[in-house]
Image 1 (cartoon, one colour):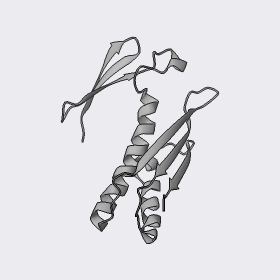
Image 2 (cartoon, helix red, strand yellow):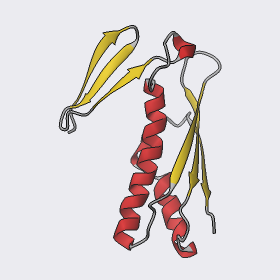
Image 3 (cartoon, rainbow, N blue to C red):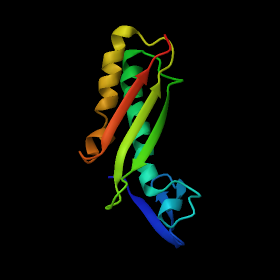
Image 4 (tube, one colour):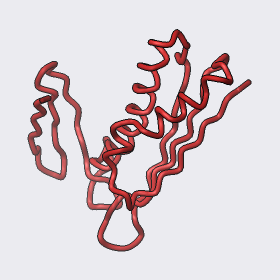
Length: 136
């Protein structure tokens, strides 16, 4: 169990606290949904969780296997539904893999990314477009 506390500050803003570490961050409603858009929205955090989970689980395996993933980046695009109910309709994940990942290791890395806990936790209606780009 990981305890997380969230306090509503008013004006569609919350402060979330990771209780074990004390680390905090602010969420804000997006400008297209009555907010100021001055921080991550709750649905932005879902998109962020997807990217962080993919890279983290790939990194765990790569570390065990002696493969270097440091320098890998991911850009996430979040697309909201155009009609009610308001939902995340599509997430696009564009991974720029670091140079030097062995070709024979790439399929394993991609499989791990496609099967991270956040991917497996998303509603099946959320369209996923996951792209891996290798410089070599």
